Image (cartoon, rainbow, N blue to C red; front, side):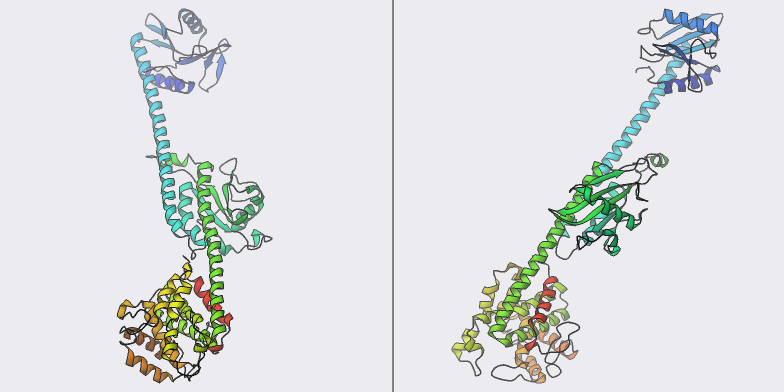
Length: 559
């Protein structure tokens, strides 16, 4: 081991130890190009000639000893006379500015003294090396922990991406991913602030209910929004990282914000909002000594924290683009359905009211069966479109006031397949196809177009079959008037298990009995919205029907 002392601090610790061992004050002498200096207890160096810490006679001996020593090879010089030992030791490897130890002892052996001094030097060096190693290990552990937390958060980002569908606004994504991120980058809080709906709007007027914050903030929300508002012009698509000059001070003009990272949530030229991390918190306490950790706060944010903030921003930007895309798809799909409904209405004014009523009946059946909200909306849409195939049936047959011939009836029976072929190319509406194609199947297998029986008939088809039959019986046709509810109910009961699924018939009749479905004798309509409880669906405007359709589409995850 190298016994050289690397700095004056350790040399001073050595003199303190030796004083307690020998009972006399050792002296440190520092050589420099400007001459000798004596190191004092108050950690100041005094000139050799003016220093009083060492007696003049001792300074004479030291000067003589220096003349005898070769500092490059000789580590010490000593003389012993009448029990008095004077020892000068070279403690450092620095030849130009060496640190020397002077001892003046009585009754001690030179070899023993040098051995003791060397032992204390070794102890001090071992201690410093151990301390340095400990700090290095702790730093390594902190880095590994931080890397692990980063990897864990990035791995969990896959779960956050699973939330990127039509049903999760940016507030949901922020609530899911930002708390973990705040812990990884050790931020007191991370805020998601959405962009105002109007470009001219000021963030100070933003509804704070729209802001998602992961934790308490020293700064009030208005201070944070003001900081964002003031910094927007400086972002240029990338993050801003600001740190105050000291742990206690705030950024000028922003009370409560000591340091921060600001990242835009944007794609192209469109900005959807901002992420703001504020106030870096302390590092974890040192292993085995928590008080040490409190003395080692990480005072500032850096590139590591900024990179993870950008990663979170990218996830939210992708979701924002997804939401834009979902909205455009919904508008397109609503437009397509509107065009289809208008085409059916133009061909047969009866069909529009009929389809809306069947859709409402079917949705109530599905809800009472315990199907999910999404599935209920799918059943509703299948009901709206179940007769779209009648576009392919000649007007003369649809509007014929008398009984259809067998040939004409065969043409009418083609409408489920025609409807299927019209809609099968709209992937967003694929879920309506089973109901559209099979709503005229009979439970005993005597229906059309496929002659399916029992539970081989898709559930949507079985639900729509009951709803369609009830409305067909109770509504007016060109060739007859609608029958009373009681008669229609009797037919449903008689044919349950034959023409229709008996369990679905029972559920529908329960809906009728509990008045969750309006009976023809009471009202010829099914409420279009909670505030619309009157009006004949057969003459209901397309505005009302499209409100129902848009509401249904908005509640379905667009694939």
